[in-house]
Amino acid sequence: MITMKNIIREGNNTLRSEAKKATFPLSDEQRQLAHDMMEFLENSQDPKIAEKYQLRAGVGLAAPQVDVSLQMASVLVPSADGEAPLFKDTIVNPVIISHSVQGAALSEGEGCLSVDRDVPGYVVRHDRITLRYYDVDGNQHKIRLKNYPAIVCQHEIDHLHGVLFYDHIDHDHPFTMENEDLVID
Ligand SMILES: O=CN(O)CCNC(=O)c1cccc(Cl)c1Cl
Ligand code: NI
Image (cartoon, rainbow, N blue to C red; front, side, top):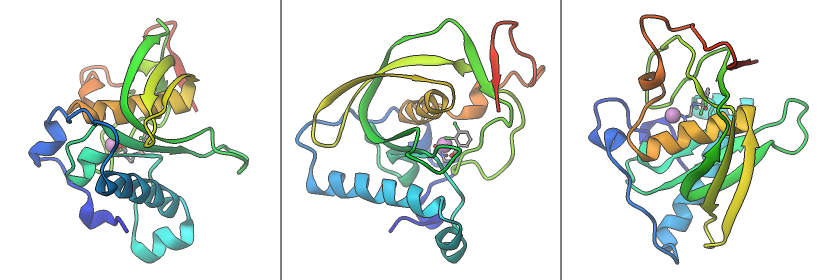
């Protein structure tokens, strides 16, 4: 199972590299990694398991964060009411093919398992995206996401291109937003 010791931190070059595009069929090792990444997210969102293994909670995890330079990220965005997740899948070779002009940022800012410090500020992203990706079986998907799930997928896609959330924060005006941009609770 993946635990915090498997997650690389700032200073490791893999985190700032362009991850390699996956080719299909994925190797057994790559399929196992996808399983392990999703399992980590489920574990990290279970208070008992997270406490037992000292896991920081996450709603996404990208392969570069476990030192694998591959364009693959698992996303598990729970719903507020404990029903079906807002989005759950492992996205391979994801591409944002269109997006809203309107931006959005989480009111709480963002955090990252690869960044061992709080970096306050609004991370302004696209509020709505059309995402094309492949699942681990090589099936192509084209989906539209908005608000929280859209923001999480953008955070993960950034990891595949060596970008970290605080790269988007304007450190002179960390909590300034354009008029039309949304602040999401
Ligand atoms: O790349 C994934 N992580 O670093 C896992 C830890 N961070 C989060 O779960 C997280 C927290 C807040 C906002 C966003 Cl957008 C995300 Cl993604
Ligand atoms: Ni992250």
